[in-house]
Every structure is written in structure tokens, then in C-alpha cells.
Amino acid sequence: MNWLALLGLEPLVNRWRANIIEGAIAVEDRMALARLEWQDQKQRLQQILILIILVAGLTVVALIMLSLAVLVHFWDTPQRTLVGWLVAGVWTLGWVVALASLVSVAQRAGDGFALTRRELSQDWRDIKERL
Image 1 (cartoon, rainbow, N blue to C red):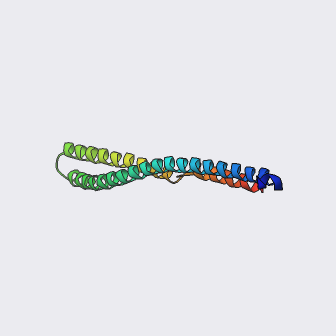
Image 2: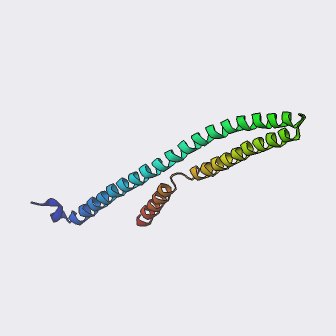
């Protein structure tokens, strides 16, 4: 004998069961989305670390080259001056490019998990509307 059917609670139980199943599916989807976004975030953090090392190394080299260029500037021959400044300029240009790349990746990394946050906020709005 089905007591739920006799008491008229079967539709209510079925509705709750369907809501729980739908909620479980939604949680699985959100977890998959968060996992994908974590992989993207991890890749950006690795790029940031590599670029920080690159910028630090190029900064040291650029300062050494700039110092060398200043020393060569006061040497006797004008060709040495030109070469010193060109070398320093190339290293400085490399440093600027590496720094710009670092800033670009860091700005993109600041917006991590945007899709997950948007989905969860949409889910929360849907839940509030149903209540």
C-alpha cells in the first residue's frame, strides 16, 4: 500500500526529488566549470611567475648595460659610445616588452573564475525567484 499516494503527498515528494536531482546536476556542472577556470587561472599564474623571473633578469642586465653605456660614453672613441648605447637600448627595449607582457597577464589573471561567479549568482537569483 502506497501511503504517500493515499495522503496526497506523492506529487510533493516527486517534485522534491526532481529538484534534488536537478540541484545535483547543477552542482556537477558548476564544479566542472570551476575546474576548467582553475586550470586557466593556474596557467596564468605560471605565466606571471615566468615573466616575473624574466623581468627581474632583464632588469639586472638592463642596468648593467646602461651602466656600461654610461662608462663607454666617456671613453675616447665615438664608435664605442654608439655601440654602448645601442646595446643598452636593446636590453631596455627587451625589458619594456617583458614588463608589458607581465602587466597584461596580471590584469587578465585578476578576473579569475568570472564564469563560475556569474553562474552561481544566476543560480542564486533563480532560487530566490522560486521562493
